[in-house]
Each structure stands twice: as C-alpha cells, then as structure tokens.
Length: 239
Image (cartoon, rainbow, N blue to C red; front, side):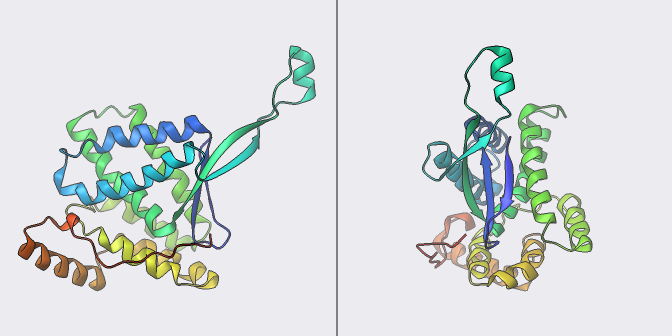
C-alpha cells in the first residue's frame, strides 16, 4: 500500500510502497500529464512532476531505500494452508523535499482537469483515481504538521483556484526548496504551512522572480520553463 510519512527532521515526505504501488503511480502520472507535445503552457509543471517520477523510478530499482514490511502471514496461516511463506514484503521508499512534494500534489490538479476535459472525464478512470489517492495521502501527512485552521484554508485553496500553474515559473519551487533546507527543525514545524501557501498564492517574491525570468526569456527567445536559475543544492541532505 502506498504511504507517505514525514522524514525525521521534517525535511520532506518519504513515499513508500511495494514495486507495484510505485509503478502504478508513475504509470498513472505519465498517462494524465501526457507527452511533451501536450499542454505546452504547462511544460514547467510537467517537467517538475517528471522529476519526482524519476525519483520514484529510481526507488523501484533499489537505488534509494529498501524496507521489509509485515504482510500478515503467521504460523497459523502457514499451518492451515500447509505452506511456508515470507512474513514480510519488500517495500521501496524515497524522500522528496516538502515544497517539491506539495507542488507536485497541487500541480497534478491542473493535469487532472486537462485530462478530464480533453481525454477522459470518467470519474472512475483508474489513472485519475490513483493520482487522487496519492494527493490524499500527501495532504493527510501534511495535516499532521499544520494547525486545523491552516489545513482548512489549504484544502480550500487547493480546489478553488484553478488552473494554478498555467505558464508558472517553476524555478520558484527551487527557491522554496533551498529556503526550506536552511531552516532548523523547529523553524520547519512553524513554517511548513506558510511554504504550502506560497506555492498556492503568487506573492511579491514569486512575481518579482517571474518578471525577471520573463524579461530574460524575451531577450533569449526562450520559454520561461527553459531558463534555469542559479541554484546549488547540498550534496548531502539530512532527512
């Protein structure tokens, strides 16, 4: 079963599941966000989501964390069924920075709306329901670290303003990731909700960054999602 829990230092969320849990999520995301020729004005958001998918795929290859999780098998079942079976299943997990994980969950809303409009609006579509499950466990994990009022506002904003990430300057996610990494554990506890809101409301810092990127894009004839900003992530992250 797919699950998410906060890391020990509240640096990010640890996404965990067996191979098929993670593979199902990756496959559903690929289906819903479409190929690179679809939804061009959402390419920045699409590329960031694909970055998370890459981390999930690395996890399924055993390149991140491997856990052994009890599966319910016990001696009574083995005796009754006359079999010998492992008592634990192999689970894979990977950590994603909290701002990145929140952005991914939010941006998938836009792609679900696009998918429903242009591809399949069946409410029981297996790909959109898989993504909704992923979003729900992200938000439930986040709920543990927000005040009740903060969480109510977060959920309200999550589903009331759409689209959120049309021609979005996704470089801002890097800015928030790096700011968040500099915080202490106590500062993260106090400010995680504020970081979530900054991904949903275009504040002055975001507007200034986007204006700067757009000015550069006008000179270079690039799209805004094609322009990197100067960022340097630490080689080692304490999760």
